[in-house]
Length: 328
Image (cartoon, rainbow, N blue to C red; front, top):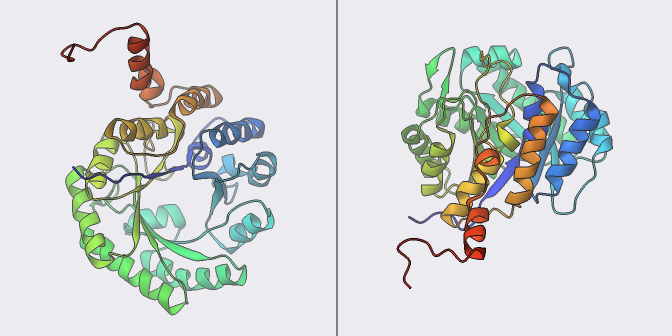
């Protein structure tokens, strides 16, 4: 199987992980988590959201979190924002790598719940978003589709519908002078399976072969890494994940379902397949255990409990144990 030689793992725990927590997390602990993750050598860490504290109270300290963490050379420190006000707040920090992302939701019902806009209203808003980003000199390079595989409120999403939405967004971006080089497909509510990943990724690759694809997979129903495998087989080399499996969407209608793919589980899988990530797995496992202490409840990551297989291999080698079936 011709997997990618190397993939990028984008760490979302400090942002998507915190937004769904019911118990307030101290600002100092959010900063500590970011600083620990910085030691793991991620290419990107998503730090916070500049959104209304009325709707997402955990993000009320966004400016304080940004002011507190230490930047590490080689890592991008990004954020989320939903409107021009949030965008301006992010830029005003002077510390973040603010990216110009254009997003749309494939489910009409979820679009209304999550952004308070219909799909048509979101398309119209995209034109204004491009103007706002350009007025702040923020480069625009990404289109994202949320609920791209299915929705708890509407059921399965037709992959051709997703492609049509991307096509519309691409045209709006082109008309606005934006150059899109990455398309994100987000399984916001955990509806994807390996077959649906192959179908949608295949359609996107066929229509936009020059654009990179990023997958934002949730492990809601235990298929997160299976979906990653299907994507790896198709050459996808860009993934989102969250340490220890933190996170989830506050408007998806779940009570206690797992959220994002645990970063350490994804890094471990890639290591076993011979795919480079550049992430320090041993350190990341330690951070995952700390993340569980920070939020004060069990998190769904597996490798932070089972351990890195390479650690067991080293112990066996140091003990002089020869694997069964090895040539003597």
